[in-house]
Length: 442
Image (cartoon, rainbow, N blue to C red; front, side, top):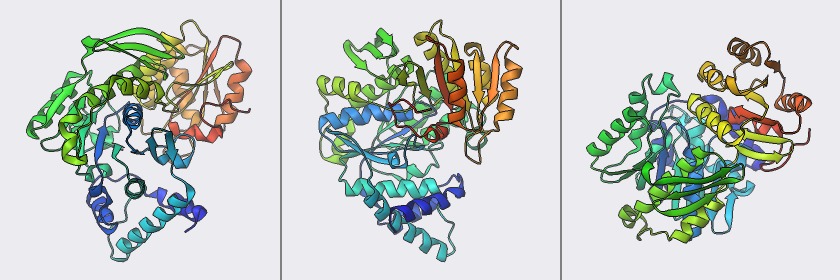
C-alpha cells in the first residue's frame, strides 16, 4: 500500500466500533511477531488527564535522553499524531512512508485472521498493534502508553514489560461498558496493574482510591499517591502556572490548575521509576531536577485549554464528559473571571451531556451547538434544546452546520475582552482545518 491506500484502509476499518476483550489483540500481535514483548512501557489509565500526564512524562524522559514512544487516541489536528516519538529534539509524528509500511504489514495479518474465520480486530486494536511496530522501528527506550476504554480489557493491556502503571483520576464515563458505579469503573482502570510492579495514582475520590489500593495489594505492587500537602500554587494565568512540589519550583506552559495535578502525577511517577526500571531497560531511571524542570516546561498537549489566539481570545478544551466539564469550569473561574464567554459545543450522544451542560451553563452568555461528524455525534438540535432547558431566556443559543460556521457566529457576537471556548468532543477540532497554536482563517 502507498500512503493514500493505507489511509483508505484505516478509514474503512474505522466502522468496527469498540469491543472489549484481549483475544483479538493477542492474536494480531502474535501474527506480527509480538513486537510489544521487545518494548518497555509506562502504562496509563484513567478517565481524564491521561494525555496530559503522558505528555509531561514523555517530555521529561526525552530531556533525560530517551527515545520515548507514544500512541495517541483520539488525534486532534492530523492523523499522524496518532503514532509518535519524542527525543531531546522534540516530538516527531510518524511519516507517511513508515505509516504505509506498517499498515500494509498489519492489514496482511488481519486478512489472514479473517480467512481463518477469526473475529477481525477493531480499528483501535489495529492502530495499537501498528504503534508497537513503529516503536520497535524507532528503537524506543520506553513507551508511554495510554489505555483507551477502561484498562483491564483494553487492547493496550496486552503489554507485559511494564515499568509502572499510572492511574489518573477516575470519573463516571463510558458507564454502559465499564459499569454504573465509581468502584466498578475504578476496578476496570486498575486492571492494568501488573504483579510485583509499581502503581502511581492521584485520586480525589476515596471510593476509587480504595479499589486501586486493593488491586495493588493483590498484585503485590508498591503504590504511591500524589502528596497534595506538598503542592503549592505560586502563580497562575493563561500563559501557564508556577508551582512548588516537595519543595522544588516548576513551571508549566499549559494553563489550568488541573494541568498542575497532571504534572505532579508525572513527577511522582518519575520519582519512583528507578525502583523497577532495571528489570526492563537494564538501568535505573534517575532524572535530575533540571531534567524535570525543563521537561515540564517543554511539555505540550494540544486541545486542552489551549489558547490558539489572544485577540480574539479563542480557547480549545477537550472537556468531553462531566469530569472534564468540571475542570473546565474551574479553569474558567481561575483564568477568565468577569469575561463574557461564547461557547461552541459538540458532543457524543453516549456521554452524559445533560450533566455537562448543567455544570457549564452558569458561565456562558452565548452558545452555538454543532453535530460532531461521527456516528456517535449528538444532533445539534437536541443539544440546543438541553441548553434551553438549563438556561434563562436571556442566553443566546444558536445552531451551526459546521465548526467553522459556529466559529463565525461566535465571532459575530464577540467584543474585545470576551472569550470563545470550543469544547466537547476532540473529534471536531480537526474539522476546523487549522494547525495547533495558530489562528483560524474564518
